Length: 129
Image 1: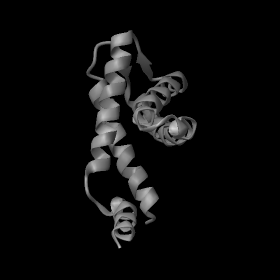
Image 2: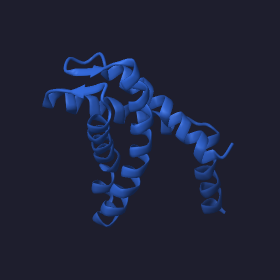
Image 3: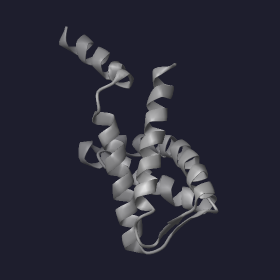
């Protein structure tokens, strides 16, 4: 299995857990059909928006690039809520907290060591030689 696909599946699992946690928030409504659709749509949009936002912000410096994940998470969640009939989010506080929950879990997934991280390890090895 390609490492990119394995990493995407792991991210998809993290997104599923994060969306399930967000469903506990007041103002966040998600039914079972909407959950499955939202996980798939959010997973695809998250990859796309991360790439797009990084491309747009990479010349702005490290502090701005650090917000790439947060911005792309919000954009993916916004578009997912518009495209998924079983998902609705009401209230600014719910939007902020849901975005933070999903972002924190996605960051957590990328710090876990595993086979999807070998690209970084190989790059680190090349840099040290």
